[in-house]
Length: 93
Image 1 (tube, rainbow, N blue to C red):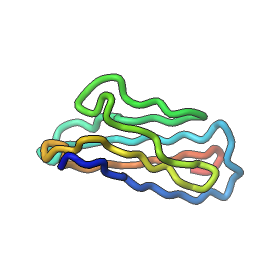
Image 2: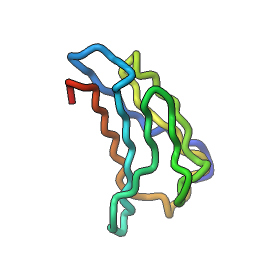
Image 3: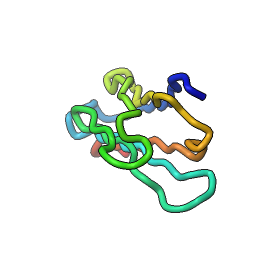
């Protein structure tokens, strides 16, 4: 609680990394409920502009190295849940 947390995500692709590569991070609270998109990357990072993670997520990945990690600032127990990283590199998924 209170310190920055690294949410690691690594990937491999059989296709060259291009500007078409997409990274989506979603979150589902521990208590259940709908999935919430909290981060999107396509050529550049697009952090969420609403919700509980607004202004708290930063891009720390490097897609050229197969890294799609993000960092969460000031985590709280209420942030507990499932964080899912999805990477698509057309035509490879």
